[in-house]
Image 1 (cartoon, rainbow, N blue to C red):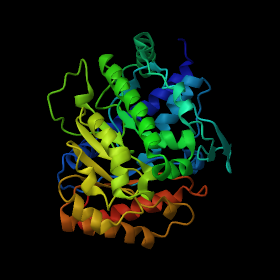
Image 2: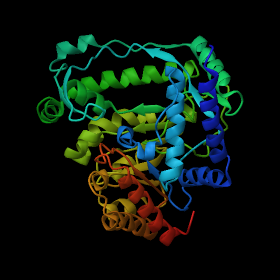
Image 3: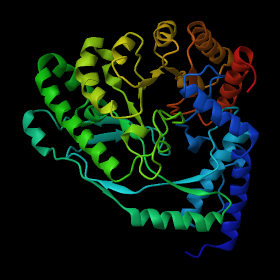
Image 4: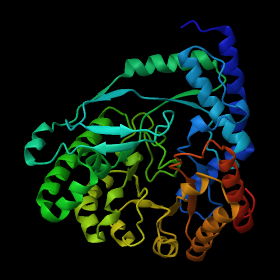
Length: 414
């Protein structure tokens, strides 16, 4: 495709800056620390900020784009975001010296379709309120189910790679990548039904919930079969709850055809923080453990507190990382996790929504690092689910510097 020379110059100038950062000694060491942490080594914890409301973040015009072409403008914005992170956020920005192009495929789904109403406060924000209709209220609705069918599109991949290589002109190596596994069946079911009907059915109609989970699990198993068959999985293909998947593989991979055994199994059951560990085990873990066992490692958890059920999670034979949410008991979590798994800490994003108080942030992080050092936990720290900073980008800058200062004190400078 013929692109404007002026616009290509903009992209390539930004690409050179990007590569200078990615190839720097600082970032080589940083990427090593991410891998060491996932390998259960005690290192200075990687600090990450993700799920950022970028529409609120255009500080000093750093995200203003010059390209008019839609494709180039998207690439320009992505590059500016990475340069922005490096300039303003004192975090461990995982910047690789490649430009990934992800493999294309289509998925028919399982036949279940969400019906919802949305309410937005800020039209620019993708975080909105949802009201879900119960489309699976009775067993007759199960007839909508069909097995998912995956279709790869290698011709699209070839075209996308060629286009990226033309745009970057050798400045950034272009790398075709597959995907990782993100499996959240109870998030899916809560969007198909709403949360309350499911919680009532735990008590009133448990056999119906088991029928639903049998179908959802069948669909996921078939999806994994097909993704593996078509070579659509890749250990580099998915961030793990916003943390990099970098880890030493358990077996020698075949880069020509990665499979389930080479990738993480990323899963959770957020709504089950409201049920007992035994119910959680019955309706979620017992269905996902066989799926997870096909993979290299398992990362469990999202926003739900898990401190009272980590013993249940230990049933996963390849468990490697556990999410520790803002509502978790930090001491209990650290004691249970110890050196066996990564303590993947998620600080409270409410602390950056209005005015960021460094003392509040410091207290939260000090509590985390003291507990992790006490019990020998490898740890990473990820601020995520940031719905808003009130159009004050400085909030994240203050948060990042405060956390980095705490880690300097307890682990030494990066």
